[in-house]
Image 1: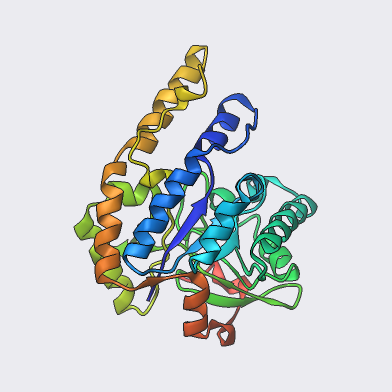
Image 2 (image 1 turned 90 degrees about the vertical axis):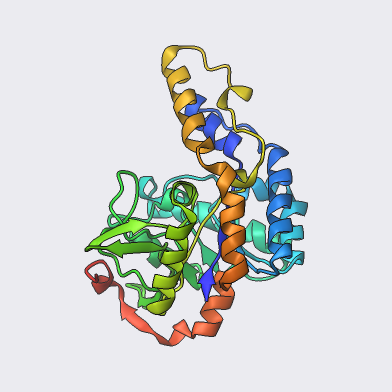
Length: 300
């Protein structure tokens, strides 16, 4: 059993904030993109977890309700897509509570899962798990057990486990999927990694995870399933060379390989079992598997 997740955020909204510092409302584009996702999941009769950004839920509440009505799990992606490692405990708690309360009001059930924007729970912000446990979250899926210039905890235990927190509570961590080859751990979870890797490599990664009885925890974004090209300059004239270079680089990075995402994920869903975080945790009974958090970052 593997895990399929989507980070429900608006690419144009977040790119414009990075480019100009302004935060415009989420665009209707995300509705069309999510509809394509729901069609794909319905076609393969697959349940998934949607980590929903509060800004999107506030703008399009009916979209969130529709996702839930179709049987998918709603979890939190925070409210304003701020990096956890750049916030204080108090700021993080406020942002997370705002998102959780909004989502629970929309779908009428407890929100049990969280994923940090940009996987920004790292070695210096592990305190965030303590905050999440105190806020009543059952699991987190923010930690990438790799070295990356913007995220990741190299050497973090790659299998899902339930950890005892400093506050005395527990939380289950679902690390993003990696693939070890010749002692080197490489990411295969989704996003740009999924767009770059050929289908045979992704199939090999699924088989490796299954042979080790570890789920392949994946992540995707709605824009990766959009057949129309992404274009920073569609909403940002981007005067000046620095902004133009940023726009060209962002367009290339985010459009590269997108045409192959739909057929790749369709092939995997047709052959292998993927499901939501909630359903996996229930089936795996991880609530009984207790590990101390202090040893997690040292496990290989």
